[in-house]
Structures are given as structure tokens and as C-alpha cells.
Amino acid sequence: MIVGVAVVPHPPLLVPELVAGAVAETEAVRRACVAAGKRLAALSREWLAIAGSVDFCGLTSADAVGSFRGYGVDKIVSLSEASATGEVDPALPLPVLVAGWLREQAGAARVVVETVDPRGSVDDSRRVGERLARQDRPVGLLVLGDGSSRHPGPAGHPDERSIGYDASVRDALAAADVDALLGLDVPLAAELDVSGRAAWQALAGAAAGRSWRGELLYSDSPFGVGYHVACWEPA
Image: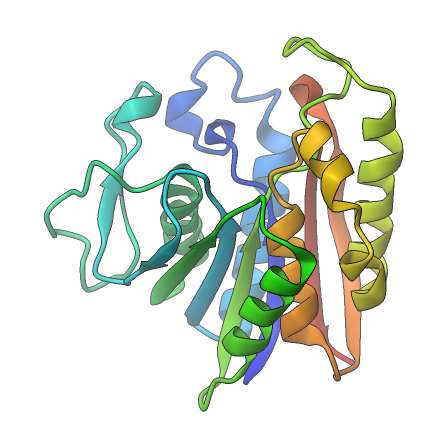
């Protein structure tokens, strides 16, 4: 059974070692993510995670160890306490690395990460969530995904539709609104470069049929990318 949910983005800038010159500018979203992770760990130190990734689709076991070397610093992270000294897998995708980093920051014991194609259909995502919800033990669900990268900012290529799209995501996460998440527009998400859409709709599949209480910890678009942090707990 899923006993709680933490929704976070997965940019490299969450890791202080990777943004030595901009730690203060990234502190607000980092602090919110760690707070969400700690709240999830207080409910269960055993985590499942879901994220979209074009680099790899499938399951990454809690035995995995990775490094942020490809993002500028050889910062080692592990998906479980037991695997902290294991051999580094250089191919772990960014969401998996961030899940391992947040596990360490929050004090969770282990996290198993499932990555799905961010271009998949609503039904594909929903079915993944329904499967994740069929657990015979209490687990926390970590949902990783970024909003649109088309907000005004240094990345360029702004699209005014990004503001409304991320506002819809923000409101759905704050209200724990499963139907609103399932209603997110798939083609528009692709146009706006929204990496989190599939993971949020997997969350909707996992949460369906139960009452939840949502709380938004952070929602903003620093550096031109939408980031949302929220916690859901059973109502």
C-alpha cells in the first residue's frame, strides 16, 4: 500500500556540489524537495519512484550506485543504504540519480525507480501507476518530473502557454486532484517540453480510488523551467 507521496522535480541544480556558484539561488527548491523527502521517509523508509526518461525505460533496483560525473562533479549517490559502496553504474539516467540523492538527504532506506517513456499515452502512464499501487507492504511513492522548459528565462524559446500548463499542474498537485492530472494535455506537454507529465499521470493511476490530502511546498519557474514540489497523504 502507498502510504504517502512526494512530488519533486529532478534538475541537476538540486545538488549543491553541481551549482557551487548558485547555491543561494537554488536553495528554495532544494529545501522544499528535501522537506518533501523527509516527510515521505517519516511515513515509510521504503520507496518506489516513478519518472519519465528518454534514455532508459524500465526498473532500476535499489542495488544501483551512480554518479553525477556527467553533470560536472563526481558526486556518488546510491539507491539504498546497503549499496552505498557498490560499483558505480555510469549509465543511470538523471531522475534515478536525483532519486538516490534525495533518498540520502531524507534518510530513506532504499528506493526502487521505474522510468517510463515521457511520450507515452495517458493510459500507459495510468496503468503503470495502478501496478505500482498493488503493494503488499507500506511504501512511499516518489514522483519525479519537471514542468515546462518554455518559461521566460536563460534557456530561450519561451512559450506563453507554459504558464497556464504549469498552473494547471500546480493546482492539481495542491488539491490532490487525480482527474485533473489525468486530463493534462499530452501533445501540448510535448510541445512545451514538460518531462513530468507521464510521471504525474502515473501518480494519478496509483492514487485513484482513495481520498488524499495535498499540500504544495513549492511552485516556480527559476531559470525558465517549471518546478513543483508537493506532498500527498491519505485523507
